[in-house]
Image (cartoon, rainbow, N blue to C red):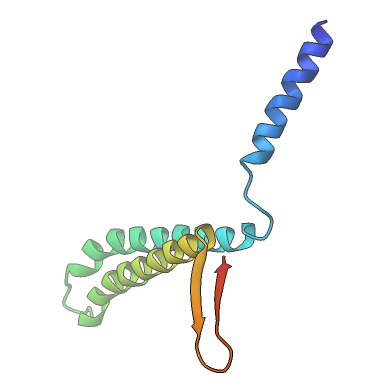
Length: 113
């Protein structure tokens, strides 16, 4: 009796976990977008760390070194934005409706991920 209960419990929890998985065709775009988000967050964090260090001026320091931290933050923010846009496109379908008028009339509805 215990074996049957354990087997049923494993089967029920296994199918629930399988149902929550991301489809195989959506996994690569989600992985790429997550990678972009993490790299962007790392660059923005590095820029926030570097900015106070490069902002202090010494007599032999070039004024262009203060821009390094701002550049890191800008590039990191851009990557975060691109990653979130890519993640949104991978998760939500895009529906387009086309209407044809002329010799042949028709309506075409397409859903693309």
